[in-house]
Image (cartoon, rainbow, N blue to C red; front, side):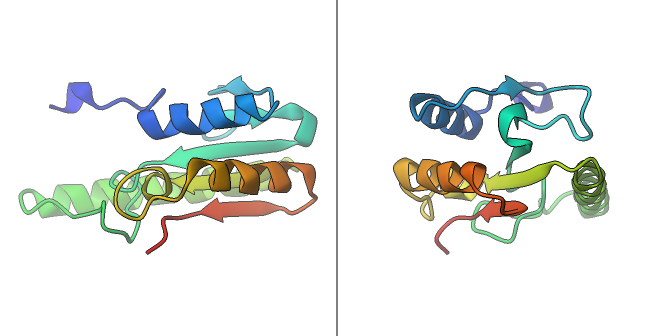
Length: 139
């Protein structure tokens, strides 16, 4: 089961990438030289974007449910993922990068937002000087 879970090129990531590319933005993917290996890197705008899966990053939404088996393992795993996220965000901010996060629930499930709305929010953010952006589902 776990071998089928991807960390790159997930459906929510592909949806966002497609929309931003159609809007005229060019970016690098999964740049290993940056902390946290951001999903999208916009060097021109000094910005990075992470597309977080709600389960793997413990988001408080309808897509996250802690498994009933091996609860201790999963709790520790998700807490560790959150710690790694915070460290990457801190390190990127120290490097002077702006950080955007879009959650899976914003692109999938019953609380999803229209893709043009998300692309528009990122378009505005990238062209602004605003430090961070976080997009969640509607619930």
